[in-house]
Amino acid sequence: MKKDMANVLLLGNSGVGKSTLINAVLDNDVARISLGERGTDKMDIYEGGGVPFRLIDSKGMEYSHLSQTSARRQIEKWMKENLDDENSEKCVSMIWYCVDAMSARLFEDNIKLLRGVTRFWKDIPVIVVLTKSYSEPQRDEFEDIVYRQIQKYGKGRINVRGVISVVAKEMPINETTVVPPYGLEKLVDKTIDLTPEALRMVDSAVMDYKLGVKRRMAHGFTAAVTAGSAAVGASPIPVADEVILVPAQTALVRGIAKIYGVSSKDSSLIRTIVECGTVSIPARAAVSSLKATLPGVGNAINAVVTAVFSGAIGEITIAVMENIYTGRIDEDDLKWVRKFTESEFQKTIKKKLPMLKGITNIDLTDMKSVGKFVADLFKA
Image 1 (cartoon, helix red, strand yellow):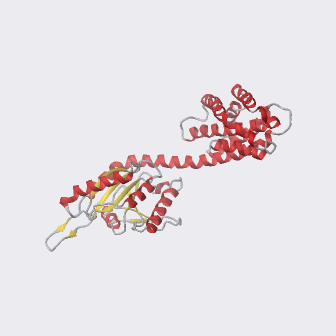
Image 2 (cartoon, rainbow, N blue to C red):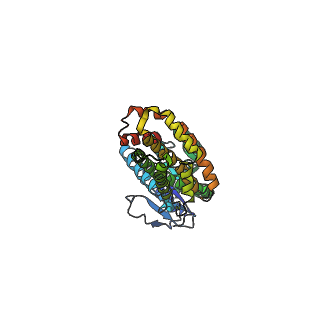
Image 3 (cartoon, one colour):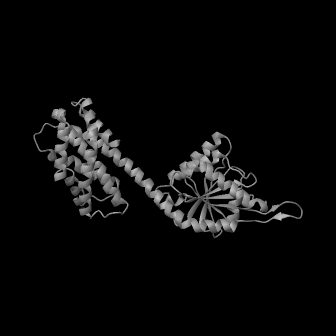
């Protein structure tokens, strides 16, 4: 499937006319696209009729809590699973929220469901489609009622870009009167107009999701290294602090770089970060600050220093790698990396110093406890 086509998710209660709307918009020339074995067999993608966007039909929302919960989970699963590279072409970029115009009202629970679906990224465009808008004199009135209800119950979290009355298929009223199709062209034009903006939001949402996954992995890795580094730092070898620190921090930085897919074959980037966080003048000053702050730690001081430095370098490396991953800086811009690392290192150590006082409340002979304390400190 083409990634430059918007994917429009249709939401609405059962019987609201989503299938009829799909057939009308796509000129009855629809093709179901295989979704794969992901447990979302009730989510179907359609395209055709020369329309430059796809339509995703969802399970109709019922009025019972159980049915609404099932529908919400299915839709949320679909949206979350398709925020990765492999399936991003199925990522929802716009929503048509279908409402039966004959009811002229929304239910608060339905709008809560819509809020839940749109939480995956901010400001996804939503078009409210008033289906079965057979009463021409009441169309403007109904559009206004529904718009006000969305504003009331949506609590500013739903980006409504239009409320459009539609008759998807001609409706015989009596032997002499037939309501013709109405509003389809306006709905299609509005969707096409919003497509560039919607696709930009998809790109941003996919990037945010991927960053979130990588960030969680990197923080978890940092916490594990931080907890383990206390034992390394406690080694009773009479050498300078930086000699103890460098190997552990190098492995930490390389591991985080790998999570973000940043090449570490050329070690200039890795070495720059490690040097700024271990043997540079700011790093040496930080060691002195730590030791002065924790006079009662005694022989465990190296363990604390090593653990704190691991946490600080981990946080800074994550920030550096995110800047590289998103293209904000080039990995060869070592001048920026050095300046950023030294500046952030001092800020991070200074910020964590007051919190370190609590370390005297744990068993300082238990390096696992020391490491966990510092790891938790950086998690917070």
